[in-house]
Length: 328
Image (tube, rainbow, N blue to C red):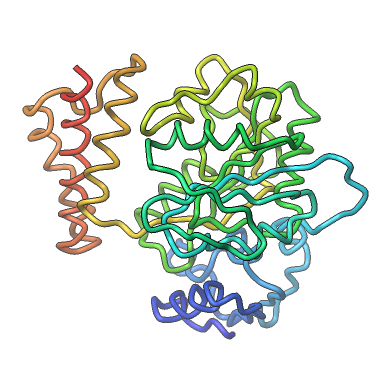
């Protein structure tokens, strides 16, 4: 595939190839680069881990490829990892990549609602949906490996050594858990991509993080036996992280982002903010007057993203206000 303008059509094409499981050999037009003080074209730290091969015409990018490449498989591991995935779709999007990980012993699919009854290569457990925390706590009763990796059914680990990189970080430091870096899909909207980059930025060094994130977090199984996952409907990762030492491991990349949609944004903000306020956090939007006062701040993002983004921004504010109300 050749990138000439990094247009929306090219980003969608790249995302479609990845979703189809097609190895990507990417060639980037050498004329892409800096324009009027800003970078145009794909970010190498985000596209290198996605591609089988990558080159920029007229440029030697071997150093950048080495710095950003997804971790390859290695051998000789005696320790094992169980992957736990709550799932409501036909099959987890990242299943093939998870089964290819060099330390994974078992993939445990906790199937709820319209989720699968059989997934090739994984163990499927049918469950009644009782919330994120309860389902993950229930899954732990079935785990007997050294480590457990919590993820979601729309995330894809990049590189066959992604989970092992988290294991190594956990072993080398006095951490209670290790969180992977999330890379947005190439066709993610600008706001989603920007927020993911702020939450899990690129880097090399393992650093402390404020909380775990069950999009992609590794634990020692014994740690979770001693400190169980709270049985709460959502934000169980934030609840668990209180007074814990959490490592952020940017060299372990996972592909993950969501399409922004008002209804989903309202519900997620409502439910998560209710939990955060219950933890003792100050509400982001404490009352209706604060919600109204926040509305002018959505105008600029709405100009950039159109009418749909205006609805998204309003939905987020409304959800944060409703969550604060529900927590009282």
